[in-house]
Amino acid sequence: MEQSGTSTRLQAAVQGLASGVVSALRGGDHPHVVPAGDGAEAGDLALAAVRVLGADALLPGLVRPTPPDPAEVAVFRKAVEAYPPRPDAAPTVRWSHWGMTRALRRLDPSFLPGPSAEPDTGWLEGAGWQYLTHQLAVLAPLAVPGEECAVSALAARRPVDVARGFVRAVRRRDWRQAAGAGRWLTLLPGVPDTVGLEAGLDFVELMGGQDPLVVLQVQAARAARTGAPV
Amino acid sequence: MRSEQITEELTGVKSADIEAALDPVEADGVYRDSRQCAAAALLSGAAKLLLSPPTPRPKKG
Amino acid sequence: MTAPDGVTDVRRTAETALAWVDAHRAGFTLGEDALAVDGEADRSWKPLGELAQVCVTVSRHTERSDPLHARARALLDFAWRETEEGDLFLRLHRLEPFATYPLEVYATLASAGYRHRAFEEAAAVVARTRGWRLTEQDPTRRLGVLRAEERCGIRRPSPAPEPPLTWLGGLPEPWTFERDAGYALTHVVFHLTDWGDDAAGLPPGLAAYLADWLPPWIDTCLEARKWDLSAELLAVAAVVARPAGDLPPFDAWQVLRAAQRPAGELPLEDRDPPPEEPGAPALPADDEWYFLHHYHSTLMAAFAAVLTCERPAAPPAGTGARHRHGGRGAPR
Image (cartoon, rainbow over all chains, first blue to last red; front, side, top):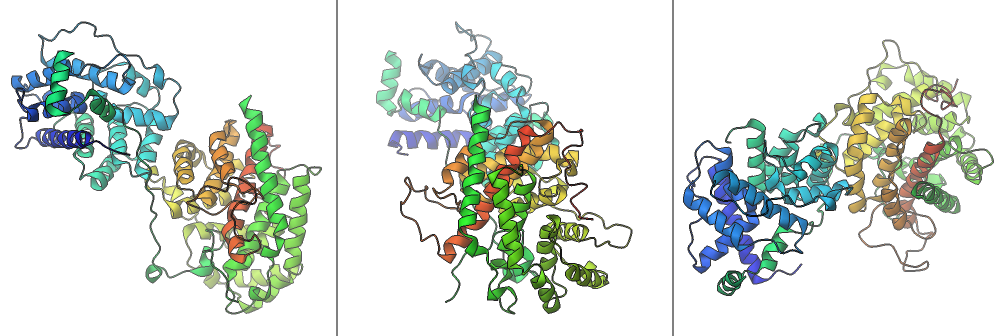
């Protein structure tokens, strides 16, 4: 598949941002995840990267007891407002944006956008387990403990299918999908024990750990499992 | 709308790039099975009977 | 209606696959190599043993009036003639008394009623030794040998040996599956269920585990174009689905069918799409390499297809009518 130069730069920026989130989740020396930009080119690329990483850009602030840096929340809010989904956008684009508004509402009480209704889940109703898992993995930022939505409710009805998708993703060495699916599995009731999720997450991190987006999902999954920073 | 256009001009990041990143196609599967190393195998040949297919290769002659 | 059409297609897979096998009987002949000291058993006894096992299953799961049944019986007669009505087993036994493969191949034919008393007596003498019983084997293979002994009336001294611990029996993380684990697990199921005849031979825990994880294994083996293993897994899926009355995975069957060549054969694996039209580039069908690269997958496709087609017509579990051949298939 051909990638434009912009798309490559955007991917690099997303990876950099993901590394920062991983570091913050580990309680490391990178407490400020979202860079405070103010209109410069680098700042705008970072803003786009925040939009792509979605609600996970603020994940440290959501899973840790310390309140997030208001400047970071402000940049996150800017990304939410700068890149609203177009009316014909793909469902994952719309849900990703909705996930960001949900995170923002929790961290920034002054954020009260107009329509907060959830997008629909029609495109996943009756989907095969392979496609379901791929789409859920793309929407892994919605897999947050204690946060319900129509997507998480749909996933909760198909734990075995998502577990099958996890197995398939590992077999295909699609570590991003495996990590995203693994994160969902930590939240779903009724996943067969034999899947061996803990060892599976370790394996995915071992094999795909050079990709910060993989590590981010694995860390988020572990945080969801233990309910504590990792 | 206007601010979006300005952003695109400054950074070259188009909404389409962002949407593509948020709606990726599935990567192709990559498969490689563990090989068998004869040095570690005490049993070979007939031991595989009825278990796995033979390695196809032409018979001499 | 998808279901009946799907079954019809699967049934056609069995017909075309077995037709190819029948047309390539010559590939299964034992030849000089069968007893030669440097002959490769994997290229003589193994193909014949597999042919026999698949035909036993096909004949058990089809009506007498079914052309598929007649073809399978004819191929069994052919296989038995190749062993010179069992004499070759005895001669092989004198050459390699401690080899297990002659007993394994013989046991398959014996389960269909082809018996050779002198070979059975000879095998029983050797099987009484501690050495025979202590032969070191892969756990899956060991299970197969124990089943072969049962089929031939050989009784190990009590207590009965513990079933060997296999990959499948340990309920491993399903994402650790790869090729060799796949071949091992399918054969564990085949041995436990007497090659799909007795679905109840599968302990409920294993059946539930398989029902959970067969879909991603089949999906990825098909994507990797490992056709023989895909067919073996589809056979296991048919056995697992039978008691529950679940529908077969018709979409997976469609992928397998697409890999079948026009004459009915299925390659072991390939990286190229199948030829679009009959007569498209293909190796000469009588080439030995071609035979060795296709016979196993083709047999497994016929085997899996017959087990899959049998399923919807099977009486509900618990009626006992399913066990038409008694017990685990051990002849008395």
